[in-house]
Length: 391
Image 1 (cartoon, rainbow, N blue to C red):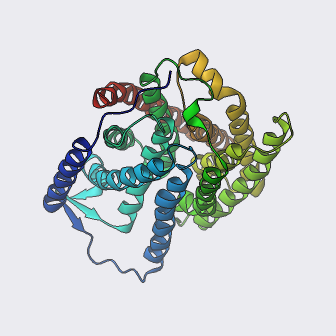
Image 2: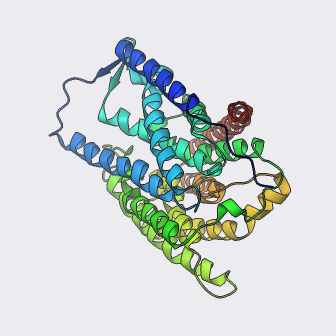
């Protein structure tokens, strides 16, 4: 049988939202200041301003439209996405300032274009986690889940270089969401549930979301990349590589979709998600990818694994682990993210000297272990809290 309807949220959601927003405002009053002596006209800040706007569109329009694919959850999915992103961004600004020592000055958190981009990337991690429980949670549960997820992600970045490893947000968000979904699993959920149906209209709107994400993904990957004296042109290299990887992903997603279909037709779900897997994978490995063919190969492998995972892995996860991943974030974000992590490891081992390569390998492995363990533990701990809120 299908899960029962959630209790009325008329008194619960406004109260929780009001209290959270009041707390945020008070914290901003005492701790947050706008960074002074910053000129938008300078080349660096002008570039950041453009990237901020691109990521802003991805967060609210890309993920928002993509969340409308379920027939009976389209309006709710889009609305909850806006609510979740708005709250998560405010919380991420505070968490980045409190938990990362390099982000605050004399007990003050300074807001800059860079810090706002970091906050939106943290919010993107929460939206990835939301995809695993899409259609199974109410907005109060999602708000609490987002606050915990953002806190855990920022905390996992404390021991690493935020600028270099922030794209592990895909792995963290996906594993966190999958663990919450595992805790929330209820008997009677079938591989193709009645509430999981889509139609042409919802599929079209979801495709709009995919197109917004696909077009602006180069800015998403390159936003935190800075050119150095010893590595000039790195930002443009990342933009070119991301675009090529995404282009290959489109071709592979459509090809695998048609090959795995009994009627030889393409599956819109594959196009809506697997076409983005190349951007996810190249985002993790981007600082070590300097040639076009490597970027294209990463996009090829990421899209292949993602599309095949959509076809076979999702149902197996349900039967073997009793975990229902609605948007299959494990295949779209976690698997390509880990693939990108392996690509970065191999490329650095091949290019660095032996001593430096060994040091990097140890550090690189520790970063992934910290990220994965934090996401799994915090996702498992968050599940019971969301269960309490549903009663």
